[in-house]
Image 1 (tube, rainbow, N blue to C red):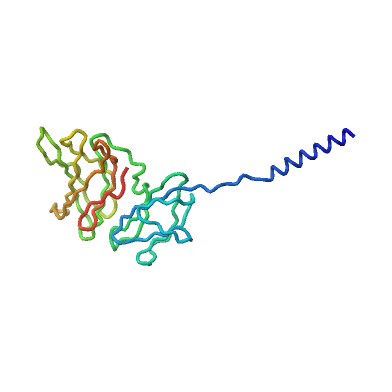
Image 2 (cartoon, rainbow, N blue to C red):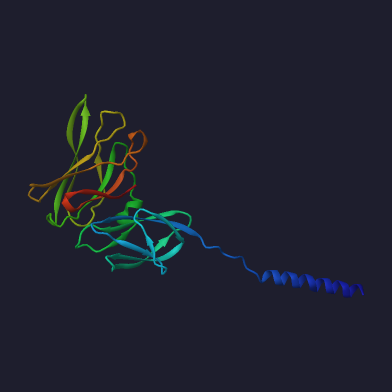
Length: 238
């Protein structure tokens, strides 16, 4: 009788363990943020997923992590249908890039041109990578960078860097000096002079560094392009 009781108890325990092992934990989907920053000369509409969710420029949206489908339109004309990766628990910034009507739409991230892995420069300098994306300019140009520095309270313009044979592809990164402002820790804008290969000045522009508290630089490595009307635009930085 006692043996039968033990066998019954053992059988009951085995049944309970077997029934528990059949279950599996429920995997909740992980979400991540996605931010689209637009650098286009025309209005581009972005649609996420098959549910036709419109993404407004500059708006951070939460999506299921992993590969997500995105479609990009101009006046209902499909320009690009692609998959973008949404990382869990972080915000991933993608750049919608179409600087001119002759350019194809591209979706870029911080891996573009090696920005993510480019080392930071020493204090007192920044790094630039430049591209000539203005079809009104020659295919190749020379670009001279200059800045204002103050010596004994007197402003002086000095050459900060020079990029030769700049084309429509972003150049390699080059160290550029920054000027010494009148206020400790301040920095001045960089003046950009575009020349043809015969060294004739054909365009001028400027770019201002983004600064934060204390007038200190928030970034020190920049991707910059010369676009429509010879405007210099920071595509991305770190």
